[in-house]
Image (tube, helix red, strand yellow):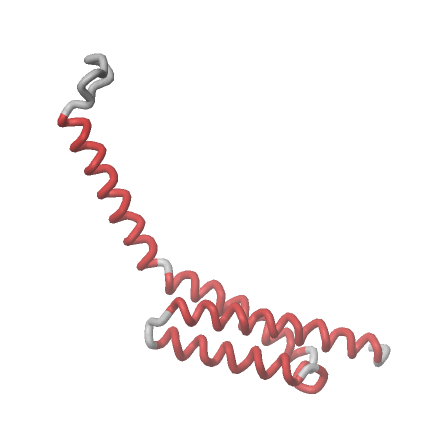
Length: 117
């Protein structure tokens, strides 16, 4: 900075520190991004499996077969993808499975209400 006052000029040490800090931040972000896939998958598959179990207990195979089996197959495929360490796809599949399990639960509950249960 040719026209900057002496107290605002960057010293070579401050430039090196800033670069080092940026490199550490980038390395930390890469580490966290690579290590979280299996954790995110575990949380998502647990939620999806719980919803599917609830749908099963409500008889969703009978009252909402499309939604139930769509959820079931997505959860199975999520488990397969996770076994190959493809956690991004596994998380997406588990999310879809959970979404359809929730739809199956809703339809099964509505069917129970309609039947007076």
